[in-house]
Image (cartoon, rainbow, N blue to C red; front, side, top):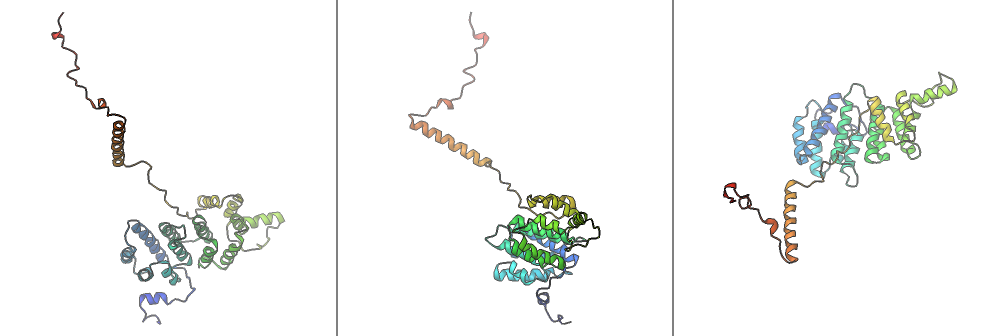
Length: 310
């Protein structure tokens, strides 16, 4: 009732700061479409203002995304960035989404904007599933930080603020910020897995031994982490995707440019080489024109047998 007199954008901004609730499924469906359409149309060199205005008309009005796009478009025209606007809509866009976009807009970062949009598209698509595994979501977000070198401290801080994680997850993610420099990621995952608890119970021969710390990963994820101790974490990420169906992180598309020159350039280079050859021959004393002579097939034909005399 208090928001009845507010406009759509004002109502969207009226949520208390620091509140990051999980959205409805239809919101994430439209977000996934929004990030994909924005990426595809920007690749066609369309101005971002026109893209946002066009996509805004396509999004379902039963969601709050059209109002969010209106605010993004207004902030983009004023400040030239989307990340600052997403930060002000922290109750709609998650801190991780805002962090990815702001890093992509940072000139010193190595994250391409198209890759950033693809990361957010895959994450929003995963959130549309009926059951979201916090372990799979965290590994996906952490792999995004690792592959794109976005910084663990700020990145994990943004991840920990996501409402998809309970207090046990939030406490462990914040602890990882300080342990990553001295402890391998595979060890961190294994220590909070059901497999680690099973191994501890087997060692102490006590099947009812309570868990010393909250268990966050299942036994299979723990076995995969234990098998990848001392290895590159990317191998563990790939194994989790193969074995447990964790979402895969988008990667930059390989360059499609060929080392071979276009045909018209090859023809021009051949002509230039022929001309340079003629110039060199002239400087050496003359041009040999015999190579340009054409043989006369009539003059070189064998005489007719009737014309010969005995």
